[in-house]
Length: 191
Image (cartoon, rainbow, N blue to C red; front, side, top):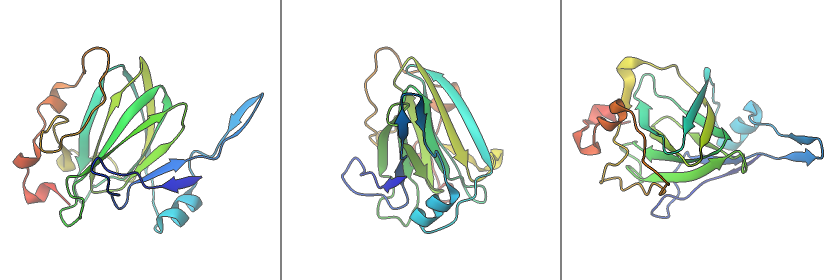
């Protein structure tokens, strides 16, 4: 496994976000890879992660999910990978004391590049499906908790997320379409 930090849309690195590229062993039979290793992740991150649940999501072309997060005491870290198709995955820094507060990272994850993104607690997360069929699997560090759940509008102009253009319409849930703008949030909605 190879760990690297992606750059934000403004060219800076956001502390805590990592792209994980697996070592692939491939031959005429197919391939083998470690999709996750507690030891390698802890060694690379410098701290221990404990996952409590795996989630599996399926979407069609143009589905946009997010930007979702949970505040303390149920903040979630997420390890996200796309196992079918291709997505544009976005993480927004919501840590008030961070040099990159409200900055974002966007990366393509696909069944071809097999890369994953580690998004620690303190970030909002969302993705856009770029292919006809998409399936993602992600591990989380805490369980879903309704009272801790928060959302930010995917098209908040203050974030200026550069979502890729797709053929067709963006499909978004009513709940996500009614999410708050950053300017509507109070200090308790951040980290």
